[in-house]
Image (cartoon, rainbow, N blue to C red):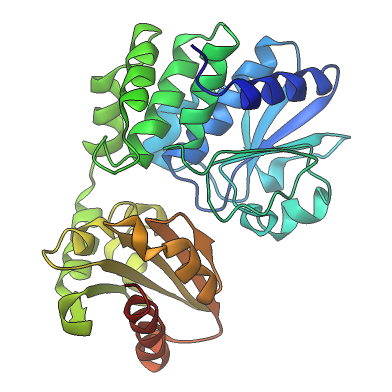
Length: 329
């Protein structure tokens, strides 16, 4: 029985519409496992169908995700030449998420494959399934529905995206269907050992020092229902790390007993970025993210405030989160 018959048909139609064209497969800024996995998978599926496809992003592929790229053509936006490419976005809730440079190059997007509830259907063809676990969940389902043959590298990329966006199969989005699709990907060459080793077992000491500092900053708000942690300006330089090293940090305050919403604050020279996590979808972090100049999923979202500082404005942001929390029955 097909997983998503209507959306799989739309995916097949999208691929056919791209035949003979040059395609840039674009993901969101500060890419995670589902972003890179879905880009790689779409690119490899397209290339196997004879489409001249390449992956391109605003930020470089994080070191821990490079093994999942394999031999897939993948470039930074500064090394990309438009040359008549059409764009397909994966795991992007809206066009701003690809960055100003790529958005300027691609005012029209041919395809949008995503699972964010806040997706605003910004492309000519929009295939959006908010109830799925990951963009890689969607693409894997399309592969099986359409009986598309994929190689082991594609299976590994899809599996990695599912693992990361389900929190290693811990989040509510982990359904029997997700396990079934994951098992089918294992039969095609994905490997739990390869995935776990590359995603979670190559920590550098500097990242652990950054994590130590983040954990020491944790604070409780709203009677213990909100837990926040900070990465102040200069933290990356002091620990020899980078922004990609914060992946997974926000899950620590999320796991504190009694906490409903977890917040990670990252201070930059030009403002504050943040990550939000919840345990229960009723807290609608996608809506909270919008209140904070961001967006995302019901259980995971982000925000961005330019031209403000952590010391001066953190309390105001916490107040908005508290107000949102108090509005939930």
